[in-house]
Image (cartoon, rainbow, N blue to C red):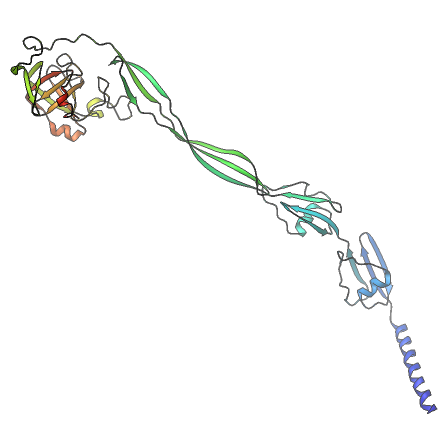
Length: 366
């Protein structure tokens, strides 16, 4: 029994001696630790990075970064770089958060956290500026929205005097038209909050056109007796009347052998285009109307007088013409082809009624 006891003790002692000898035979490793601007060269028998840090007294904070992980095996001549991160407040729009960075320049902080700047975004500091711990990097998100608006411009009314229009009468020579303007503006938003509007462009789509009103200044002249007068004044006698649409109407004159032709308001008949301010306006200041307007020689039929033309009907002398002389009459029609089709009609009889139309015929005129 004693022999066995001393044998076990010998085995244990030999194991301890072997371990001590084996440990003593391990070669020292050389390692370099870089912490900020401090460089430390150490000799160690540590097997891992964690053991090395514990041996030399390096406390690794949760925000620190080591170039080698703590559980990694330590080799001879390894270099371990420890980066100390520091806190910075990063405010992007309405969002604010605390981040840890290892760099002191603004541009590098943005790059580290993948912050992209828009073309109009604003940042408080220059990108090359250096930040200290707990500094705030403030980014304002800016966006713009273009808007186009259609607005109108009111037209003016101009009054002109016209000696060819009877005094006290007004005639619209040109209708007014509003102008149209297209305006483009830019609405600015900072962090999704509206801040201002700036003009971008403005263009006139349609220019306004004045309304022109002609005011008559022509004084009334004493009515001249018709070229052919009947005996005495207007008579109610049967021979001085004519039946029109079943109504017996007194007349003041009868013209025989009258030649009729037709005209329109177009350039071919009047020399005026639709753009002319007096287009469609008669010599008496009225607007031409089919079924009513005729052009006459005012020395034969005074302007404003009503007549009845055989085969044509009731018409009113409202216009004149350079080629209308004597008992010639031009009948107004709307289209050139109607004027051509009308042709020239000779030998017609015209009954001159006078300036006033009997009330019984008023509803029978256009």
